[in-house]
Image 1 (tube, rainbow, N blue to C red):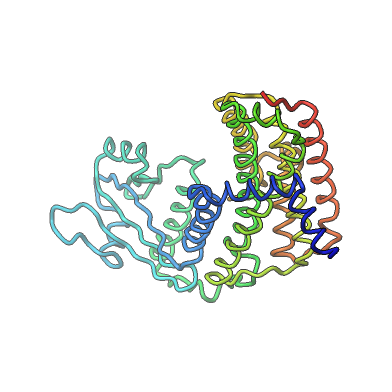
Image 2 (image 1 turned 180 degrees about the vertical axis):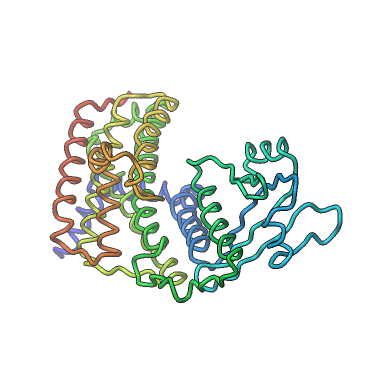
Length: 377
C-alpha cells in the first residue's frame, strides 16, 4: 500500500511530470537523435579510422630546373618515370612497414606555375637547381613543408653517398600501449564536447525559442515553479548525454579496443559534475533574451572558444605558454583533462575530486544567478 501511495505521489509530482514530458518531446525529434547520438559516433569512427590505419604519406613537390641535377639521376634509378611522354610527373615511393609508405610526386614545371601551385596548396615545396645543387623553397612556418624537406633531404644525402637507408624497423620502436594512440586522446574529448553542445543547444536554445514563441508566457500562468522546469530539462539532457556517451564508448570499444583504465565511479561523478556546470551556463545564457538570433550568438560565443582552446582535437599545449593557465580554467578543459586521465592514465577519486567540486560549484552558482535573472517573457 505504501509503495502504491508513493507511486501515486510521484506521478502527481510536478518535477516528475515535467521531466517525462520533456523527455518525450526530445526523443520524438529525429534531428535530436541524429545530431545528439548518431553524429558523434560517426565522427569518432571517421577520425579513428583516419588515424589508426596504416596509410601512405603523399607529398607533391614542384621541380623547376634548367639542367639535370642529382635528383634526376636518382629518379632514374629509384623512381617511376612517367607512363607517357606528355606527363611531367615522376613518382618515388619509399616502403616502410613501421611508419607507413611515403610517396613523393615530383611535378616538373616553370617557376610561375610552381608558385601558383604553392599558393593553391597543390604543392608545399619547390625544388630548383643552382650549379647542379638542389635548393628547397618553402614557407618555414609550414610544418608539412618542413616534414617534406627533412625526409627528402635525408633520402637524397643517403642515396647520393651510396649508403643504404637504415630500416625504420630497427631504429624506431612504435608505442602500441593503450592510451597513447590518437583515438585514445580523441574519444574523451568528443564525449566532453558532445556533453557541452547537447546542454547548451538543448537547454539554452530551447528556452529562448519557447520565450520567443510566447510559450513561457503561458507557463507562467500555471502554478509551475520555474526551477522545476529547468531542473527537468537538466535531468533529461543528462540522461541523453549518458546514453550518447555509452553508445559512443561501446562503438569505439568494438572498433578500436579503447578501455577505461581508471575508476569508473570517478568517471561517473566527473561526468555528472560536467552536466551541472554546463546546465548552469545554459540557464545563465538563456535567462533574459527572447531573440533566437541573439541566443545563437551567445551560445556560439561560449561554445566555439572552448571547442578550439580546450584540447578536443589537439593539445592546448600548442598555444602560447602565457595562455595555458587561463585555458585550464575553462570548464570544458577541466572535464576533458579529467576524462583523459581516467581513460588513459588510470586516475581515480583523488585526481578528479577537485575538478568535480569546482565544476559543480561553478554550475550551481551560474544556475542560481540565472534563476534570479530569469524572465518568462
